[in-house]
Amino acid sequence: MASSFVWAEMPVDDLPDLTGGALPVVQYKGRDPFSGRDLTSVSQVEYEVRIKNQTGDPLEADSLIVVIDGIREISGKDVSSRLDIEGSDGSLQNGKLFFRIPSVEKELPPFGESESITIRVNNPDYLRFYPPTIRVKGIRRSAKAAVKELLESLMQKGVLHPEEAAKAMESAGEGSR
Image (cartoon, rainbow, N blue to C red; front, side, top):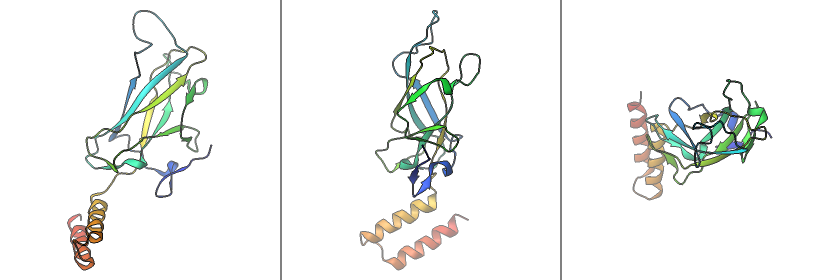
């Protein structure tokens, strides 16, 4: 499956990696099948994944995706190819699967959390593995873009004249230098 478009006609492969500031929060759905005293394996594991925005800037909510970077077994070997991951929204050019993060709002605010998605991993060989390593990709919203959108909205509502909005944009641009 070829990479598809997510935001503003930008291919998902070209979305910036936000993993350093947008943290994937991965939890077992239900109970952790691999903890406890008994060595057990299961044929299917479900993870609940959401994003916590630690960037200090809003993120474009409709641009956010999570990429399954790999799944490692107890020995450290990547076993992604031996597992079946259900429900992905596509794959990157390198073959890694991605999932879109659903959004109710237009932005994910700083220090906010996204809606959750469920990632199902079928485990036909009954391997014991760690939760997936996940990367976050998306668009970080700049303060200048937010000001521009606000000014456009105020013009549409008739609160600002176009000349006033242009002047405000110029002064906002000077303030960000």
